[in-house]
Structure formats: C-alpha cells, structure tokens
Image 1: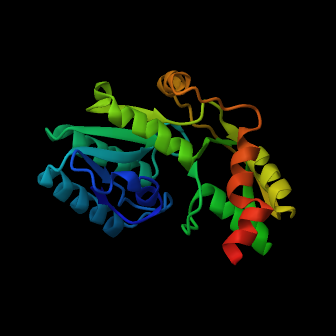
Image 2: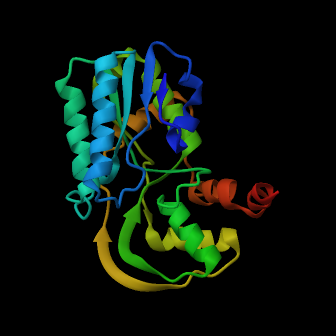
Length: 236
C-alpha cells in the first residue's frame, strides 16, 4: 500500500499492492515550508495511517536533523514530531532519514532541481560557501530501503539512508555547470551548513549489496538525470 503520489511514492511503486508494507509518502514536499496548515495535513494523514494498521509503516524523515544550521527550521522540527508520533504508537514501522535524493521529479523545491532550474533559466541565486550536501540517486535509495524493509532487524528502527560522502555546494554547482554546459549566475554567501550523518549502517548494507560509490558518483548521478540525452528525451 502507498499513501501519496509524488516523487517517493512513484519510486516505491513496487509496494503498491503490498498488504504487508505501507509506504507513507505524502509528506510536506518543500523543506523550506513554514505553513502550519501543510504540517497539520501530514500529521492528520499519518494519524489515519497509524489507525488503519495496514502493514509495517514506512516513513521518510530527513537527515537535515544532523545539520546544526538546519536543525531548528520548522520542517525539521515537524519531521521530528512525526517520528515521535510513530514511535509512541504500537504500530510496526521503519523510519528512514533520507539525505537529498536525486531523480526525475517536477518538484522545484528539491536541492538539485533548484540549482538546475536557476542555471537553465539564468536566474541568479545565493551559493552558500562552506556548506555541504549529501546527494543520493533515488534508485539507490530504493535499493537500500528495500533491503531494510525485507530484513526484520530494522522493524521499529530509525535508519539513515545517505551517501557516505558529503559534497560541497560549490562542487555540486560546478558539476551541474559541466553537465548542463551552462554557467551558473550566483553571489557567494559564507554560511557553514554540514550534515554530520552516521552512515555506518548504510555502509554495511552497501557492502552486503555489493554497491560502490566511487569518486565519480556525483557526476554520474547528475549526468543520469540532467545530461544532454536525458533532457532531450524529456522534451520530446
């Protein structure tokens, strides 16, 4: 069963007909959102899902919890409240704290889509020098989460799903400039923002799944979704 119809819901479509697993993917889509109405909408949906008790509940939280510069923003505080709501119930669950999944999505608020849209449109933006972000291919997110879902030891646990490597915002933008073959227009603002994510468990799973993230991972992922051939395919 899947609750939601967005980026994560589509990525986990393999669980749509499952009676044992309930993918809850109907959260607030914009991490910059400050609307109490949107937060309350997710809370109400989550409470309903917990009352339905249809299989193990899979909830997607955020690794921004581990970034001191972001830990107090309304979105992150809301996610922590939703985690506590789930833990305080007796419903079997797994809480996945995700970093920045990258894939094809119309959501303009994702980290990479924001940069891509600005670069392609020539819109000027602020680049946070001293900030790092954790980028992970949505396909890898699905593989890692699916492994955890299939293994009983993760039931009622919180699992960080993130890349063992953080990338500076400068490196991300530079790589996008190369992939899109277009210069970004930005002003540099000095702001330290670094997610300090414990990836020991995901590293163990990567070894089990024989998955390797090499030095070219960032470029490979961005080429996959935003390279020339992919963009042309999307325009046809």
